[in-house]
Length: 251
Image (cartoon, rainbow, N blue to C red; front, side, top):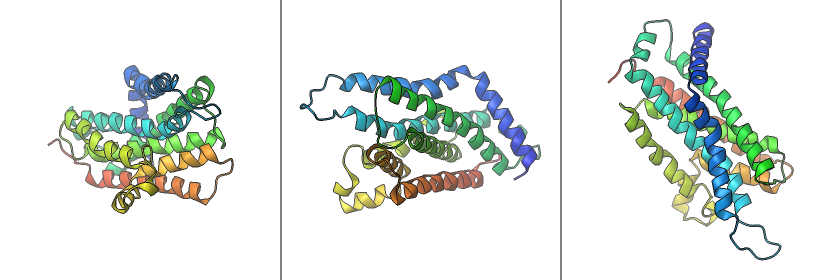
């Protein structure tokens, strides 16, 4: 990695993000709005006295799902747009390397992901009244890591798409199975063994498991640490593959 070209790439992408108000609104506001909508969906669901309703558990889980889903879509389309408009071909004539470009994208969007996590957690805790046994900082960490995994996988998916529409088509393929197998609908321990093996290699499983630990435990143990390390490893692995597979010409 060349520090100068990496820094220049990061600054360029940050400037593009700041100038694109619609994308910023999509990243920062839409997850909170969707979670608020979900709150009103469950608000009047009857529950026995003294029993917690379903929304708090689902809300905490969504703090891992929504950021990953949204950032996957945004980054995959953003990278495709640079390829289809010829921006990347012009950049390849400079000393910029694939690693510098991917790292610049990851850094710029990861900063946005942190802001997204802060907004989403603020709405969840203060406006929607959700509480967790663990500190809110751990939730922010997991949400930010989940967003970063979505960023990395979005960049990887963009290498295999030729149009923005094809990039979006990868989203249900990437996110759909994870939502079904992450433990949101059914605990992974209750699934058939074959599905448990699949769930064990999907990043969203670790995000949901980590958030469940924060919701139920005041102190984070080794299981939470393993979930965080696994999420970071998924992000690093996807970024490395994205750098290796990024085409140098528009197909």
